[in-house]
Image (spheres, rainbow, N blue to C red):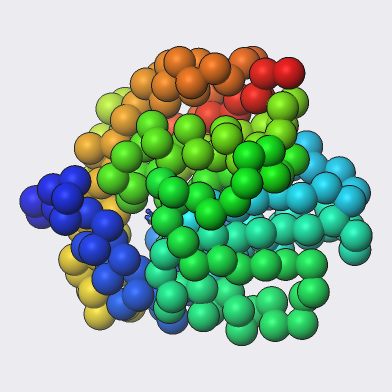
Length: 234
Ligand SMILES: C[S@@+](CC[C@H](N)C(=O)[O-])C[C@H]1O[C@@H](n2cnc3c(N)ncnc32)[C@H](O)[C@@H]1O
């Protein structure tokens, strides 16, 4: 498929996630064979959040990471999730109906509606690939995070070494999307946006260029997923 232009991207992405919101969680479990939970658990552990702290999840979607962050911050800490899709947020709202220290905000990842240094750590998972300006999004996460806090990106990575994965992404996943979500285009977009996405090395260089320190890459899922971890300098 042809990817939308940068100008068209926000509207295209917002519509796409509004369309698939109620089927997103089930589809995620199927296409990743449940593996996304392990990657997310590991990424959240790497945030190094502790009791009474405040964590931010950018592009939170249906809020998987928020639930994983809660045990780290405890009853007196807080977690905040931001997304621009009202339908994805509606699923998250139903899920965390009675959780008083969890806040959901509708907003744009490239213009975070939070004061400087508001959070102890920030994460974006399977979201960066979808924003129109990667640099601005990471810069915003850094601005909103306290010095010494971790900034993490977890996302699919362009695969060059394993042809079977490319084949799975290109042919099997859109078919799953068509059969199970009734939305082939959404899962063609997942494959096309992954192929066009910045490499883990490129993202590491971006993190460093934006002033983050101790930046490292961890490859997961046989290289199909990469986590970039950095720390805001003291
Ligand atoms: C693939 S989902 C990931 C959801 C969740 N983080 C996860 O790991 O399951 C991508 C999410 O990013 C959101 N998104 C994309 N661009 C955004 C932007 N510019 N501002 C806010 N949310 C955005 C979409 O609405 C969608 O919910």
